[in-house]
Image: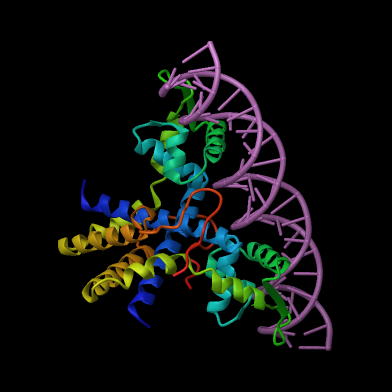
Length: 160
Length: 160
DNA sequence: AAGTATTCTTAGTCATGTGAAGTAAACCGC
DNA sequence: GCGGTTTACTTCACATGACTAAGAATACTT
């Protein structure tokens, strides 16, 4: 078996481990993965964002975000506030309960990766970082030559 | 920003890119991601496997596999065959149409990663492989001390 | 042979995602 | 400032993927 295959296998293990772990973590925190992700992004954006931004960030449609925000609202974890400057817009913010829940539900990757990573030697950390960024760039490239045509709609849409 | 954070960001980019890409690819092939995954695993296992093995491999319950195999059957992409040796067991195989579809829907990671990977210098490949395996080991539950219980039902979330 | 364990399916439920169609506000050209 | 277009979001109907609980059939163990 060559290195390409082995690398792919390692990559799949990473994806799989993360996916499974995220599910469990969300269950433990009493929120579903998608809702947790929304809350994390809201926090990351400084405590308030629009559905539009959430949809872009998460790579899903606005309709999906509407549903998630509805549920977060019902759970008392987030709120909608009409924007003053543009009344079409809605700002999503966390309630204090939402904050609490979020703080108690550490990020899946965070939890699992950080602990191990910080245990490594300096040079190892440097090498891992460099490799991960390399791989990310390889996968994330939006300017793929001869990229296979995928779906209708703008696939090459967004990033961050 | 320190290396830990940067590494996490890179890791997330990898996860996100893969997730989005997989969706598009499955859509383009006319199958859903989960069904595609099932077909890929069947092929990987040499053309036939049991639901049990699929469930384990995918990290999902058997009931889920039953549903997916039902749908693949309805679509004419896979078939169930009673095992001769153990009549509780079922062997899932691809139909020839299933084969065709699978061949025309290259693996998401494959597609995107291989092309870039094989372009790298020898030493770079070696380093990436080593790093990826390292990260996979870090994330993989099996290798974690005090790993949180992952299986169904109650999860005692541990906090550091 | 009886009891237990394993493999799979069925049934019911829930979460996540979509597209299409609708509403309301903002923007643009004149 | 009016009319048309674009943008931001919601609603609705529906597909997919996942779970648990319970059941049926077969195999294994003592």
